Length: 505
Image (cartoon, rainbow, N blue to C red; front, side, top):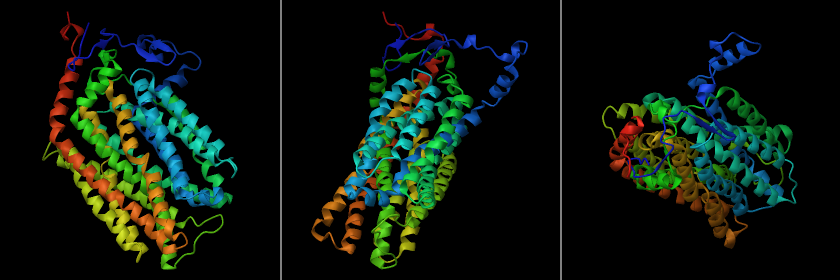
């Protein structure tokens, strides 16, 4: 019986490259190249198709799918005011839509992490995309008497999107390494702010064009069908650890329980996951409530009127969506470039860059609530800088995970990092902010000024959580080198022939 460096029992200690699929197992040896045989009808097309299955094409398609994932998630936020008016629900009821989505997302993530480390990943990805696309499309036909159905539909969409977010980064991790992996993960995680911003923009445009918020939920499903098809056709299933040169030991994997024990002992992974939860808390609350906050600010300044009937103005959602797209692009690019430069000065560059950006972001996010009452332009400037600094760390956090976790545990690690960040972050923050806002409004329900102030006071919780996240990144920096070296040593052991691995008596 074989064991790994963490003392875990290894399953299948052979050197076979057999790959498991959802329908069974298949040896790659059976899949010989069509170029080795005389061409038959259809083989030329297949050969051309295989030539298009490059790592770069796969990374682009996976990034496109991630854009759609987040675009669908924030389409609802872009028309939230219309949904509130249509179903006649308060701030806490509106926040519940995002909370149930995130709760189902995080509960499903560990399940898909387990499957992603053991079965064909692109099949799981495609099924997830098709599922959430179908559910989102159906939810656009829900009538005003069935708000609970809309809540249920967002819960189901969370399950579909969880499969994609948990598994797709691990495919990129197996296609690239070092700086190329950092760059490709940066492109992939650029999809988070880009997709979020497009969700506001396309949702608002579709609502205005169709004359009803229902149409906002009919854009992303059509694109989702395209993305799922592209994943099936053009994305290959790389051998786990191929970029780290351990593909020959594909079946060398530990039990799920041992994987979890090893991750719990990995201090860099634990602290970076807690820091990621702080980011999720802030972005989840901001994504839902900042457009609403800016609308109320303009009502207080008497530059706009309260929405009393549908359709409500989409101007602030459009502006906030555009800012999110631009700041996402800037944040991810600046983060990748800064980290690459800082690595020349210190090997702890990744967590340190994240810590500094988080602490800087907290300052400008605090300023939003100071200037919004007097100047909407000033509030937008603070949002722009604060979001840019906050988005700096998304791709870097994923890269930290790739450095400190071995390839055969990465899907599980990504899934549980997602579970932790959502459980402690955006699973509760939209509803919590709405609940605090509603509670503060109880005594002055008819006061327009107090509606604005109560939401602002509730949102002030976010910068404090962001500062806490910066502290967790500083803690990550303390253990990063030790955990990275341990992972590299483990990978080198997996690269050796089976006879060189420690055998228990």
